[in-house]
Image 1 (tube, protein in one colour):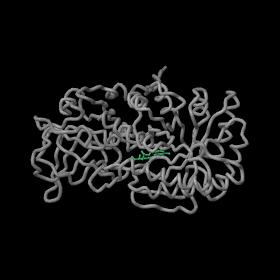
Image 2 (cartoon, helix red, strand yellow; image 1 turned 90 degrees about the vertical axis):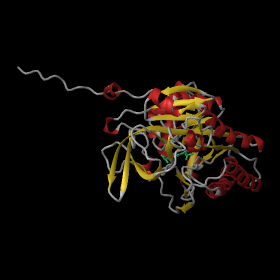
Image 3 (cartoon, protein in one colour; image 1 turned 180 degrees about the vertical axis):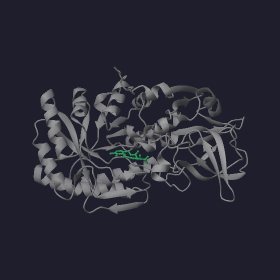
Length: 436
Ligand code: LLP
């Protein structure tokens, strides 16, 4: 997929660059990102809205993968940006991202984070709860500023790939309950605020979703409320944000639909409801993370030890694992992989790929068909671009890998590999004991 192909050395090539050469140059594990594919994904969202002549903002959910270079790329592609912490906001500002296109999410934004957002004049805050309404008003007052907000509502729908759960009691840590009166009260509060202007409402129903149904159900529930709010408060939303969650194909079990299909279905549904309410179709905002970067990332590992459990299993260990990709351990996520240096060699055995952490659960892939591999080989694991680097950690004091962008035959290191010195940089030794 993307610009990945096999070159004449039987090596995996991405963006016109040999991944084995990249691994030799920068070491392993190594995250390699196909920049052309990120651009293509970003454009497909934007182009669909443009083609259908709908005002929209496509905000890249930077939690999926946030680094200065990535944010610069998002800027180049004209997307907006969803941040969920002071750290993600700082990264965006460091990258020179236009603050007016930044949206700030989260269920427990601190005073300092809100103050940073207001001082930097970001575009919008997605307000999550009553505590935040008061805190944000206080911050705005102290800064003598006003801020556009969206209210995050919990429409009582949870989507998990193909399944939808209607959660009647809206049991979620996020947002205002849509059907228990919380959202109504929040709308009233924000409409009467001197500091907050109510742009509209937001919902996010889940992640790695393969169908349009959940988005349409959420839109329906939101419009039922918008009808009441129009009648009761004269409120007409300028913006309707339907969140992220568009699924990608990790393995052949996954059956996502094309980006334009999600967008077309959402627009159709919103238009229908807006017409019924006799209002203009609001600006539609969405927040894709995984579907922008997920399949653009590939991780290259070096293969090390092998352990045979006779008649049961071959364990093949790589030089990373749950430190650079926690998703298999955390969600039983599945991945596909090939030998980066012998892509088309015939399959000779089935192995289970183990990470190097001192933890039995640190298994990257179970039962992977591969050529007979040894410690001269490299493994390329696909679709690691979202929630790989961004959830990487230093368990077992393992340094985080480097990140390389490739495009049109050129490579660019965008995150350095962590060093052992980096690992102890914030450590403070015990005070020297003075014995008298
Ligand atoms: N908007 C909101 C409000 C969200 O909570 C999320 C994801 C997104 C957008 C982006 O969702 P995406 O398009 O990437 O599915 N660590 C998990 C995923 C957690 C997603 C949390 N929220 C994973 O590795 O699968």
